[in-house]
Length: 61
Ligand code: SF4
Ligand code: SF4
Image (cartoon, rainbow, N blue to C red; front, side):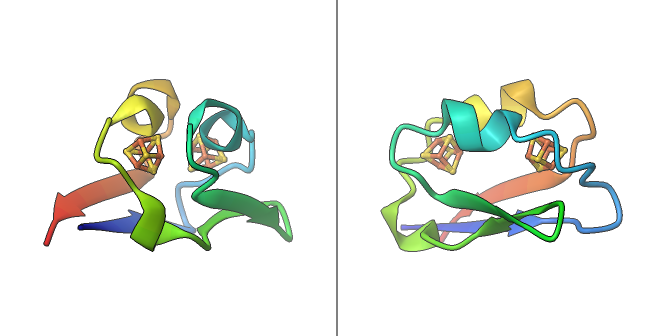
């Protein structure tokens, strides 16, 4: 399992993480990305690669 966090202060709501995540972990709510399905995370790190703001942290738990 993975813990997925988005730093709201860094996130600009671009939606790149929503587009790239194969298991729909993220939703944009009020122009911020929220990891609503973190329990589905595969740890592929695709979201880390596309987030130019480096707002995302994925940690194996
Ligand atoms: S890719 Fe980064 S900046 Fe863009 S919505 Fe996702 S977390 Fe926010
Ligand atoms: S690591 Fe992969 S599966 Fe997990 S949230 Fe990011 S894109 Fe989605």
